[in-house]
Image 1: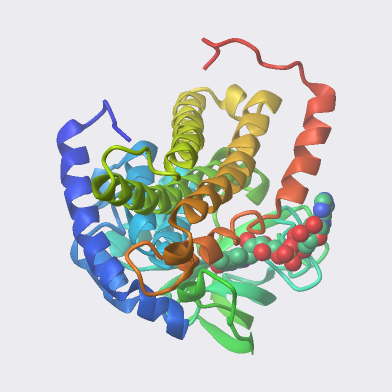
Image 2: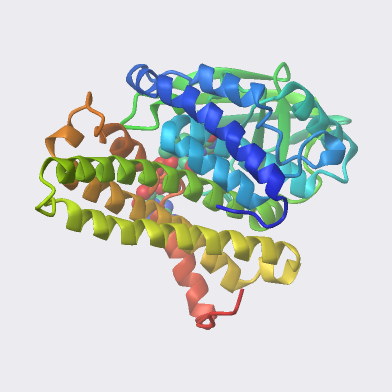
Length: 395
Ligand SMILES: Cc1cc2nc3c(=O)[nH]c(=O)nc-3n(C[C@H](O)[C@H](O)[C@H](O)COP(=O)(O)OP(=O)(O)OC[C@H]3O[C@@H](n4cnc5c(N)ncnc54)[C@H](O)[C@@H]3O)c2cc1C
């Protein structure tokens, strides 16, 4: 994905991401087999200082654009889905700080610390009794003078035990309704995590997304100054769907690359015959191109909407961003499935250059991460109130 804003930075970021990708690829099978944190790849991300690229330059980062971060997600997704997901989730959390924390002294200082020390951020939105319903919480912040305490039954916190800080959603106070939420930043040392569940899953095994009883006490200034409703609508949902979409595109691209290598090898062996998998490859290319176009249009829409707050909160924008998530999570499965048909048994086996098992298993997490059912129900309600956007120039 190209960015017209800063071509030199783009070239540099791509080179750095590719170096991390090589490290991630070398350990991806072991990370998956042992369901372990991809420590080597995350170490490489820190060494390349990629964890802070989104932070504004004045705070020690590089002011990277959404398109640039998507490009890194896609490169990492080609090499190790878990590394890519960890990078994406960290950047999603950072997007809330960058979009809503630059005016607050504590959060500005914290962004400088993230950039200086390459801190890794995790997320605790999912809650026992609420599941993936991001916009409701049971737990509540309790204020005691200048500090607050928070206890959350956080049923999924990816890499929670190795993160340097966790951004947590909760009701604004014990009397607040479930949808009156805030987001707090809790820094390692301010919280305890008591493990309640392990992470032995079909895919995305390196994200180590265990469950914890989370307890923290911290100064109230660490609560983000905007209501979570605004944070979700103006930064977090878009960042989630675009960064996830980008890494899913990366996973699908890698599956396609393997299938293409398979077809090319078959063509070299019998140059006078079109290989049987070539038609499937052409079909997969259509889906992959559609994924790329969907993502790029989503990024353009988001960048344009950020300059116009009314657009960001419009039904049309919310529908479009929801659609990016649903489309990307469904289409990647089609590309991988077609690639598997092309590679046959060599794709099904785990020890060949054409193996696709890990990509296929990882890809099955996409429709569950904020369930597509929830998103489609939300979109269907929006569509009852909106006119269809049929303009091709209507970005
Ligand atoms: C790899 C991975 C990493 C993750 N990391 C984190 C993390 O770091 N932090 C975090 O907080 N969470 C994390 N999650 C959790 C994730 O974001 C979702 O919140 C979670 O997967 C949803 O859990 P659930 O399947 O129980 O969904 P629920 O949302 O509870 O839904 C369960 C099922 O019920 C149905 N359903 C429920 N409600 C509705 C509704 N209103 N409309 C339509 N259908 C409905 C759907 O069919 C859905 O599949 C992660 C998940 C994955 C897969």
